[in-house]
Structures are given as C-alpha cells and as structure tokens.
Length: 135
Image (cartoon, rainbow, N blue to C red; front, top):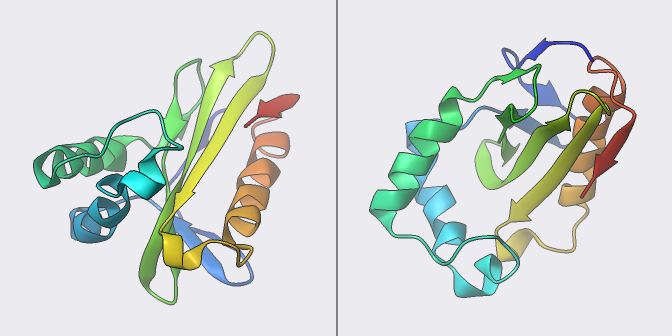
C-alpha cells in the first residue's frame, strides 16, 4: 500500500472534494443535526458545538498510509458544501479500505454521491494501491 497526502482538491465533472474547514460548520451542521439524514449514519443528531469540534478534527485528517488513517472530504458543488465523503484504511495487510458518504437531503438522487465515490475509488485503486473497498 502506498502513502497519499490530501493536499490538493480532487475534481470531478461537477464536484470538488477538499478538506473541511471552519467555514463549513453551518453546512455540516445542517445534515449532522437532521434526524432524517443521521438515521443512516453511525451517530445521533449533533449539536453545533459538537459539529464545530468534529469539523476541526476532520480538517486535520489528510494522510492515508496506515490502518486507521482516514480522510473526510467536503463534497462541494459550485462553491457550496452539499455533503461529505469518508474514506479510511481498514487493513494495510489486506490492502482494504472503507468508503461512506452523506449528502444534504435536497441533493439526494442527483448522482452526486456516486460521482464523489467514484473519485475516491479511483484514489483507492490507483495511487493507494488497495485491492478492496467496502461501503
């Protein structure tokens, strides 16, 4: 498995995936506090304070090299944060990763999650050299 640094945005036809920053807190809070959205996530609705802490933490995650390393890029459409990805290395021995995503409800069903996921899978199977990715 190779090492990869999330130093430049990942661009697709319609989207940009980039590290989360403090200015993204309101957008992230809009889905992390929404019971309709988080019922599919591994957490309960979050307060603004918790979201602020999480965005600060997530903004520091920029290296993929070892088991447990992760990146949570913002999914940006025309300058607006519409969701986020999650990608982690689950095993370096087995060269395996895990991917997930979340979008604000108004962006569901428009192919944005598929497009963002495809770009992360390109990273996983290309520069990282993984053999498996589960969702």
